[in-house]
View 1 (cartoon, helix red, strand yellow):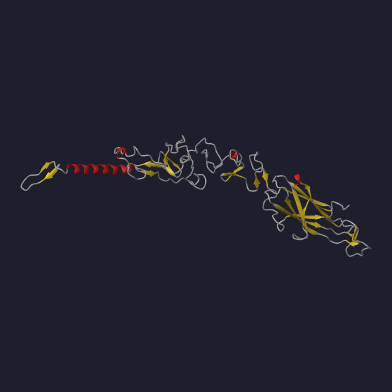
View 2: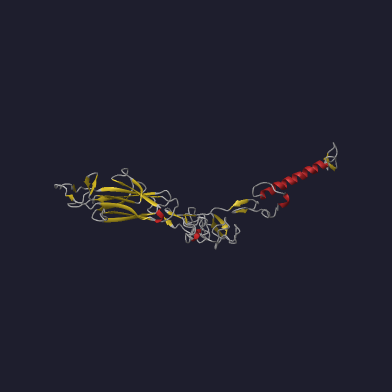
Length: 362
């Protein structure tokens, strides 16, 4: 309909050829308005079909993801943050997995995942409302869930990875022991047997001991009065070498010097190990790839026509008899290195016997 006015005439409505265009324009404006209003109900803020918009209930067709709610304009809003007590959470973030009932929230709400949630709603759809579920963002975490090694409080018992550290990893392909949220071996331990659900082999000696000749493990003094010591280890992990050091002490003598230093593999399972020995210094006269080493003066022998050895011997300061050596002080440091010869890594242990004055030269 059109309003027309003629000079000297009153206003009246008459249909005209422009009515269909105006009617179409009005309809378009109405749809645009409805679409604009309906757009406030889209969680992402974009327009939605006007048919789904309910002016009486703006949230009727709105679904909010995560820890969010629909406000009276039909817009998804995050729940307000809460500030739980320092001891309410687990781990570094006190807002994660807090105890039920802790935190500053209004009545009917509980602090979960750092925000105040209605205590009767189940946001992660695991069958447990926020009042009892310690994590509303993970459906695998709830009361009664199996505790596994993952750095989380799976069963909402307010303890991360609480339980037997071996049992927590029994279904993990690596087996081993639960530590710091993952299944693995504690430092210095190794899982060499997959049929045993833990790290059954402990490196011996400790990984930071005997790593070089300069840092050899000190066994102490072994005097030629007949002293002995034993050292053990397993050279785990592969490629490891271990060094030991001792002093073969030569006590004063006046008739026969008993000095007889020996280092040998008294226990060498599967012939897996070999030793090397240097007398005097780390880089001098290393005798390598052996299982038995001896250095002695308790003998009497002719070497290239010259008598050698100090048994018998004349006390220092005295006049030696013909073809008799002086009883010298032959004390020295000995450096023993042990290494693996087998290509198969086991947890078997070697035993090296170190002695002085225990054995006699035949």
